[in-house]
Length: 252
Image 1: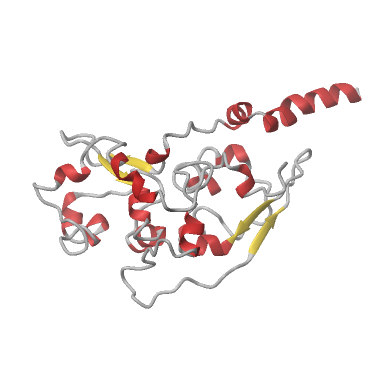
Image 2 (image 1 turned 60 degrees about the vertical axis):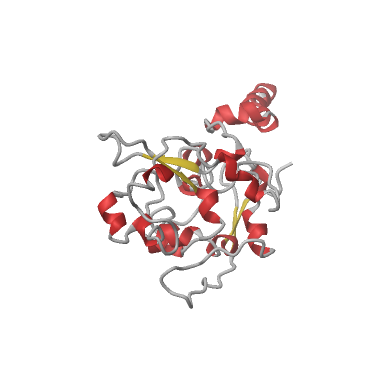
């Protein structure tokens, strides 16, 4: 009986942990694109019924100049692609992209500039990727360690475009999320400080993480791999969850 249990444990737990491809299949992780295209999305909500190509948006292009907070808190972009009703009329009124693309901060919206964004091509910014070559490297995703880049002051993204005196809340509490499942022994660490320099508290609470619900049992990897909880960012923009040791430092 004991040997049978050990065999089942090895097949369902140990072997997936040892083989990356098996691990990916267990949690149905998306295949990672080329580093230059990691974080790129096609915004097509308003173009599906028109003849215009989708808008190609590169997170890493903008991340050099603005923190995530600027777009996802101050400008009210939803955290999920195509969940925000962005229209040309709103942009011309200074909403969403129009907060910067106004011919003052960045190129404005006109017949001459439509093709800059409406490319329908995820690789539209591939040629610009070498701009990041001097930044600290990471193993996965776009292979840039953005936290180190910010800490070393190699980039200086704006924290706000509405308040020149804004400074992030100095909250440096590290959550130690102990596993609540049998057979799992590696805890996850969540450092608030590395997140608050990029995000606003309201980006995560309460919509993504309801702080009224205690415990970690519902932070399951199969949920995360479907875009819930940490997966809201750590699948397509922030370093991907394939980089296990970034969150599970005790993992061997």
